[in-house]
Length: 293
Image (cartoon, rainbow, N blue to C red; front, side, top):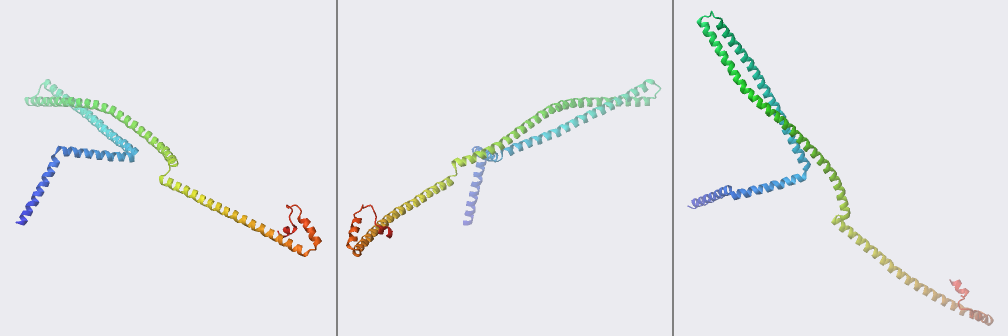
């Protein structure tokens, strides 16, 4: 019972799916929607293909037109051959009809000459009638074939004019495609130059960011180096100033000590002279200071 119920459930689901599929397939709104979706997808794909190779599409179109033109030439040749065949058949029928009429006339002359038996008379009469009927049949056939030939000639002449017009259109479109191809090549070259110029003016966002970061790094690095050099210059100036002060203090102390030592060693008169000498202008330096330097 469980298996039967399961099979029944599966059957119901299958029937429901089939009915849903039939409804989808037969519903006009669903069909219309599917048709519109298909057209939109095909239009989108066609647009993508046109963007990829527009000149190639035009060349394929021209090649297809030339192919149809070649088929038209072949069919025109076949039509001209049919007209010639009809004309040959008409000429053959005409000759055969004239021959049959000549045979009928000859039979009529034989009967008019007299001296024929009744059997010969009947045979000549039968031959005359047969040839006349055959000639009449051929003449009727020629009328029909002649009418068909005239119509085909008119159609052939019309098709020749159409063929000339078609060839002109193919040539005109081919020239237009050649013009568009040359224009596209020139524009692509110009556009490549434009793209290069645009890249120079606008630049790549990533490259611009790297460029700005590099400039910032160079500015920061230069500022850092200049700051370090300025700090070192201030420190060096301070050290040099201290060294100059210490050197001056050492020189003054040495001069003082030498003066005191001189006063101790020299006599009093020399000391007096030395005192007078020391009373000279203050801006004059002692010889010992020069010696120490």
